[in-house]
Image (cartoon, rainbow, N blue to C red; front, side, top):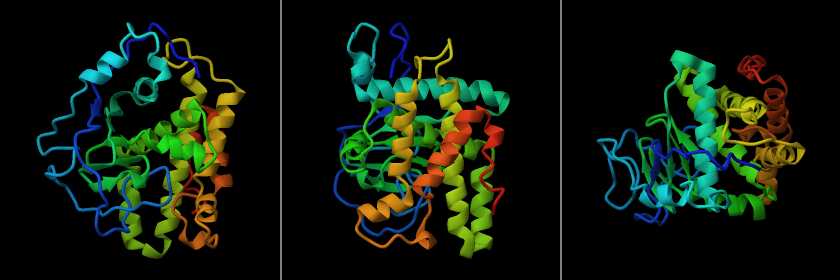
Length: 292
């Protein structure tokens, strides 16, 4: 995966709270928020919060982490910056911001991107790294502990830099669903029709996969931070999409594959909808709700 070596990496929308506390498991559990990339979400939704004294994250006044180290690492003066996962992720995040801003126009609103380690406080509740990457609609932030990518490669068998790009592109897709009203609409429908709640959750996740494919189609454009995307990169994204399918996760856990419990979709479905977005390059092709 190539990047524009002369690009300025903008960290203004990034909160780096790694190493600022946290750790340990969060009691309770079972509820989901904002569509994590992995189907097993392990933390409690506590509503809108301020900062918990033990965890880094979102404060009541919206203050952010100290980005000084990240800015220095990702500066053009560092010739090795794109060897660093955090710099690659921020560069990808910037490319996603540029693409969706241009695509949505006046409707677009900026998200924020939080890098954390071990545990974090969010507007949707407290989370540990066991959650995997996720998006919180309450504060419109994407949260990632970069250690997840080691697990994605070793446990789920999906290595590669573009596998990592797919993950953040998927979470950015959930932000698009928030600003266009899809997320709020789905939550209302789920409350009215709880028996079909999982079906609507799957449709949300598959649409985020499709949006990731739409961005991938445009990501190697002449004005982007991301360089040419070839078949190897596409294969990495497809492998990652399959690896975090509900059926694959249930198989890895040693349990029975039970579609009734799925919330994110099968490996085949996730690959199918990423490919739909990739082939079309058009968000309008991502109507995953049409079959409900």
